[in-house]
Image (cartoon, rainbow, N blue to C red):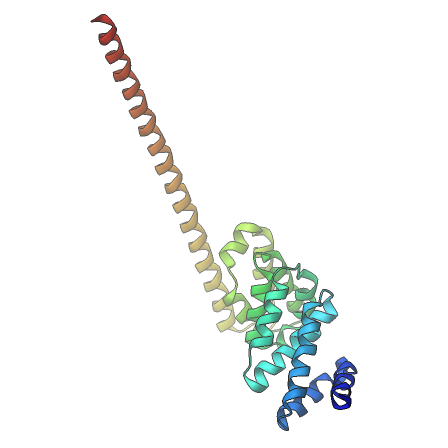
Amino acid sequence: KQWYQRRVAITAGIEDHMYQEIHKLSRVFEIDWLKGSCISWLRRRINSATETADKTFTLNESWYIFIKWENKDMLNELKSCLLVQDNSAFISEYMSDVDRLEEGQIDLMLTLGGSNSDLFLQTIMQNLTGQRKLQDKIKYLLQNMNLAFCSERNEELYHHVFEDVSSLPEISVADMQFSLKLMSDTSRLVTSRRERKKTKSLLIYDSCTKTNEIIKGISEDCFTTMFLVVEK
């Protein structure tokens, strides 16, 4: 009983700044009870994370567990908890320096941001401020965003982003070509979507017209039949 109380006291006394080291010790020395307690402690933090600071801490620790021990369980739990929340402030702060993030973290931010395309366009603009070249992580973000959706939602902001990219003082020829290709591909995709919507609308209109003609024909036939029956 005393040993159990001692375990509880140890895990209850864990603070944010010491969590990673305690968890690391439990893994290195294979202390199963401590390992389980550390996971339970982080799970409680994840389930109560509503503020940006708490979300940042739990994500960093969950990401560390994933990278260090190739265990994605806590990361998946965190994702499930955050997907039902408004993460705008958290994403904006977490991506304030995209260069320090790994590609997997950027992918996670895109998932958590969902359809909030303006948020990511604004994030890119903030990261471009003061830069002379196009960063690799910004290129990765641009490649993995739904730019066609961004353009349809806020065309002005979308064009502003690419104006900022092209205005970088030391942008390379390769990066300029990269930027132009993205814009060209996006324009082509948006045009294709509009054409499909237009065709679909015409098909629906044509179908409705034919349906009305059929109904009208049936009505006239029924009326004629009724007239003949009455006449007999």
